[in-house]
Length: 344
Image (cartoon, rainbow, N blue to C red; front, top):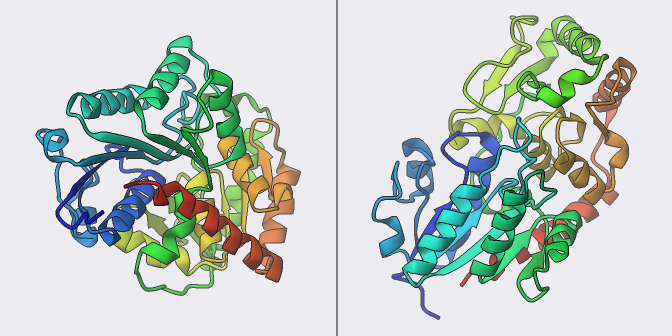
């Protein structure tokens, strides 16, 4: 099929300008451009759109009408447990996009998403409805596949792969700004359920103390524009807050290791051959570490202790990229491509 003059609309959780969501949207856009599509990613922002050479838009007005294909992608958007507040979900956005696309007679694809588990019955029904509307649903790990199969979604509809963020160095062109520093990201104040861990204040104190003591050798990272929650404790440390992909990716790629609580910082760093360690706020992060063969590098923050942080940070200081890591990365990048190759 010659898609030279076709238009692709990418729908996702981009209005919050979270690094991981924006990144996956950009990777989907770059792939579709390589297929000859003109691409629009509403809400991705003017600077990101300019960097990608995609159409800039802050609304969906008129977008469904002119699209030839609609791709919904990125994040745990077929789940209601992926955000900071359990029960919060982008499923309404996804369902509306799917229905609007179908009403316009367009093909709708969903890809690189996490699915389930679901807290609300309504979320479960919406996830099933979106799967029915879509031509294909690409999920990033086995558990999401199993959740959707449990709903009754047929294998014909499902594609099992790996998160598209693993293709960052393959599809997005940017320089590496080498620092050789260790990245620290630990912004968990909005995750209400992890606050129940009685060890959390001590863990935060230990991380702050480490950042303060090693301020010349660490970068304090944030997924969004505000400064890291660790910044006040270590004012002399370098900072890296996400505003645009063009500014953020080169510095992230120049780290030697990463300690984080969030999924897509871990995935993107791993794709750049940077060892990563996580006290994670959401189960989707555990799934990723199991995929890469390092389950020992991820512990649920709801049960973690200071000793876990101390062990992880000591390991991060000396961790190296191995031949086994390289083999796993290559395999998983092949799995990632499965989640975009079916888009036509």
